[in-house]
Image (cartoon, rainbow, N blue to C red; front, side, top):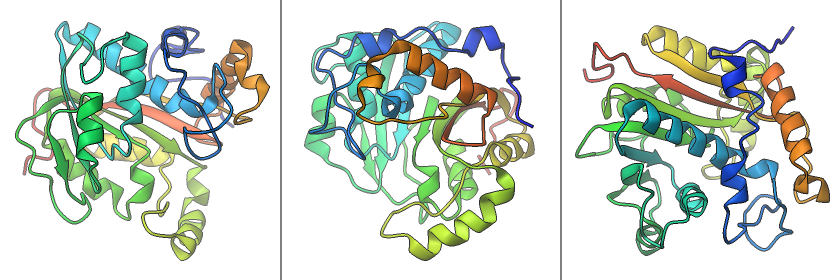
Length: 274
């Protein structure tokens, strides 16, 4: 049976009542069915939890490091995460919050002018399943948001990228999940039906734990995000609805919906450098 226990303090992480990033979205990015454009606007869309979790984890890491962060985001798409972070921090276009030193991008497809206008630094176009990205530095935080489910060999891709994370640095991300015992069946189904760059893998909570344990990484956070989704509905204007989903997601992590996580690289060894 699922429980409400987490790898960090329940009171520190759940039920995530601090919704500053949602309230500070100046342009009210819209949460639609499957995208963020042209759909009904809501104040607290479940879909935007993906960006909100990352923003919260990044701010927390800044407080831990006590200096601006070097960040690398893999699979940036249209740059919605950095746009969300910038809106929450009320920064000017093409600028970064004071707690971010640089924010680089790695992606299979790069829209350079669009990403530069948002504030991305170095933008490297590469298929991480086929080759190791030629990154020029190590980073405090590596972001893998809704990207691992698109990879046939997510652990191998993560190992390639870990060499670019500083000792003691953080790898954060999230995506859809189901219980681990259903993973093989679901992956066979996904790979049979997948279109170009569709979902082909399932990242369960147990799979992430195994990955972390085998590489001696710490787990700063591993939590579910929601149980019930009503995208674009008026109920997504309610903070109480968002809080309820976060509490239920925390209590049933890895069973339904999505999971979000933060894994910390050991400080005493450069894991993945071989």
